[in-house]
Amino acid sequence: MKTGVIGLGAMGAGMALNFHKANVLHAIWNRTRSKADAIAAETAAAIMGSPAQMAQQCDLIVTCVSRDDDVLEVVQAIAEQVKKDVIVVDTSTVSSQTALQAAEILKNKGAHFLDCPVSGGVEGARKGTLAMMVGGEQAILDKARGTLAAITGNIAYIGPTGCGQACKAVNQLMVAGINQAVTEALAFGKSMGLNMDRVVDIVSTGAAANWFLEHRGKTMLAGTYTPGFKVNLHHKDLTICQKMADTSLPIVAMTLAHYQQLMDDGYADEDISALFRIKYQ
Image 1 (cartoon, one colour):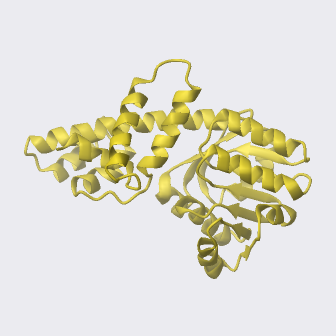
Image 2 (spheres, one colour; image 1 turned 180 degrees about the horizontal axis):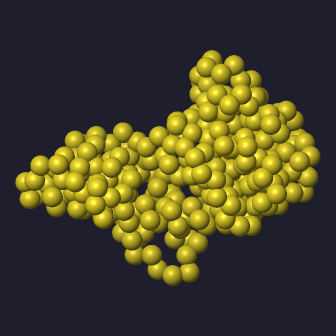
């Protein structure tokens, strides 16, 4: 399938490069032209003048933008000139309601929408090992699955439109709890005067082992917070979780407050492991 990518940030750029390796990348578009120029130089993909132009040329369009309004703006632009049966796969993290709105916009034009948020961070996007949670029609996913395999390690069909985003909300809530637990535990260990590299090594092999500890434990202890997942983006995602919830989410509330403190202190673009700054003072 001729594939286009809209949104070439850290995640979208990795996806585009992996589509190129699979010989399916046809076109790219990004608001900031310099990012598109960089990907085009590496892949020879065509830079589109607009999402609408891409909608005329591609069979599959993958969007990777930051916020609900951005998703709807891009989908509206695609809908202006979209061909019948084009599949739009949105990998952004937005609300289930936004996914339903986007699907309706494209359905009215004879096109298809899948809400396909991903997990795995910048590393997963670069390696093509993202976990993808899919909402929409399963038959449409089946048509796109072979192409999407270029950017994923696991594709899970969750249910009708909006279910992918609801699943991602579950993921983001868990990430908040894990971040709180790991940063607090490592801060405690450091205050005990332990050799923390050895602590991370052994704890990572036991019942408390987790991805975040393995990939972020030693970097946060070294005071390095190069983003895999930025504080301000997780703050945005947790705000979505709060709006979607019918019950109180105390871990979310606490993490939002901590992230707001980090953002106010100028750390919005650091990795979420920067929560360690607050835990160990």
